[in-house]
Length: 448
Image (cartoon, rainbow, N blue to C red):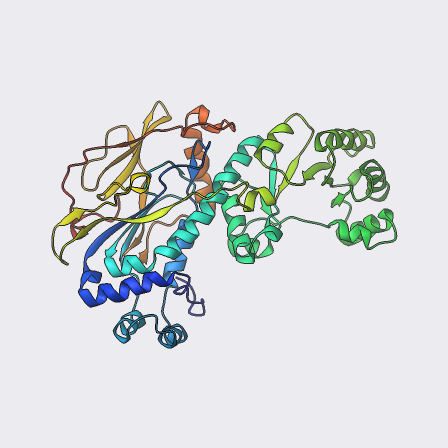
């Protein structure tokens, strides 16, 4: 649970969530047991799989979802809701159940990556917060996972902080680390999540000195010869020679941020080896994405620094998660019935669904969605776990555990999943036994 000083997350939402709640409290529907699902109708064009990220952040954010006195006074002044609803919000604590795919798990179109089981009013008011976290973090994680594949075991450094919102930068660093990035430049992400941090100097540091030699000498004096020197401010070839002149064979590495990175990396490697600096690393950066990284596979690169393409829409297209009511009761103790939205491409599939993945000889073959309360098919593994039970934190993995799970789950996918070329989703999604009755939430197990 967050410390008492944790700022409220209650207003990180859309106004219509509270106006709907206001009406639902007045007509009695706020108390109806309900089931909401988070899913995307389809993966971004050309993507073969998605990656779930942000589940632990959702759990933390819901713990801080409190309408404190300052929030309530503002809502009252703005006349957002009625006095009755203000009193209800003053006592609000989310006490429902949340089942979710494990962080790092691949997902596909229709996958119920998060299921919220709670009275309608409780489930309704958290919608925007849940979607904003899962959509952002999962977009970053999916993009980063492709870069990890392209890197082929070489180190990846997350450099996206200056290309996005300051809070989003911290979340992006976490999502990248979840799927295999080795370090981040963002110190708050390092402090908050224990991610290794990396970074030495930028071009401004070199330009602030009278010449490149003086800049390198200053950096080495401050951090030791094992530092990484940025050698492309003026001329990469000259910068390499100067770096070796200052740091000698003990030089830790060089970073190249411009030019033909493959050619520059080869020249750097040859120059370093000829000087006896065989252990010095060659780090490249500069608008890299998974395709640029893959194109450098034959170049002598030890690490890639990635920023813009990881944290912006061009490289990390939105996942398109939605939060839809799929089942509800007519009365607080009544039978659950499926509900669904019509509307062509935006139509939904009603009923409470549980997901598992068929696995044959260690390879995943199908995403299976079955009605809650029906047995899991043989040869499939469960995909959801209870992350909140009665509003209390349940099975929430730490970052290290989630990272290991991602690696194992990705290894389980068909080989075609790791092809970076545009393609269709690597697993089909199949709905089983759609006519089975829906159990009441009180009769279900929290852990599946």
